[in-house]
Image (cartoon, rainbow, N blue to C red; front, side, top):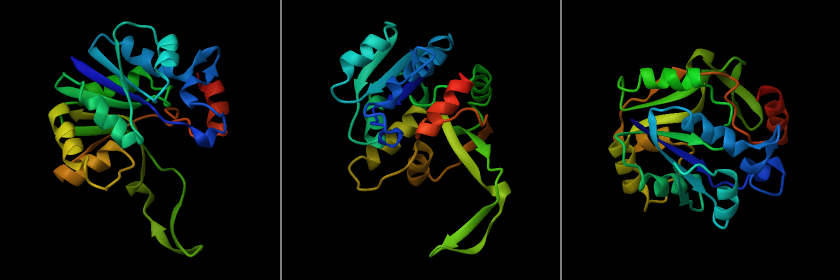
Length: 217
């Protein structure tokens, strides 16, 4: 059995909504409901931990009502929120997912599960399709091989003890990481397996993403 750790403690300022983007409704359902239900509907997930933003517990409970969900108050950053959520994970393997990434398909989740024991860590990702350039001072200075570049997504999957140790060790440092694979690699210096996902598994960041979700969901 697996644990799902869903992080939904951000503010979503770049969407210009004026409130946490996970509460934005697409087809009369908040984004966070889509994200949580993907794991609730999968019987292999016996533990679902939802990390919410300070002062939003009542609102989150009004949206996510399933009794199988454990609510944990998040921190000032995504990194701290994951750290706090991990304290409540009890299964040997944890899937860490963005609450603002509601279009995760069961096929992609199944693909991750089928490869979960091939490495201590793995992540969904999609290969970059556009030409990528290196730029300095607004000028192109070189090419980046496109076949070496991927957009990293979630879920990201870890042996729980390994990602806990990495977070706990780096928690008091001033180092910051944009995602959990970067933090994991900074501590363990191991390998993270790329599992090819879908370009439709988008994370809501801007107003354009909200419009795209209307079509995808």
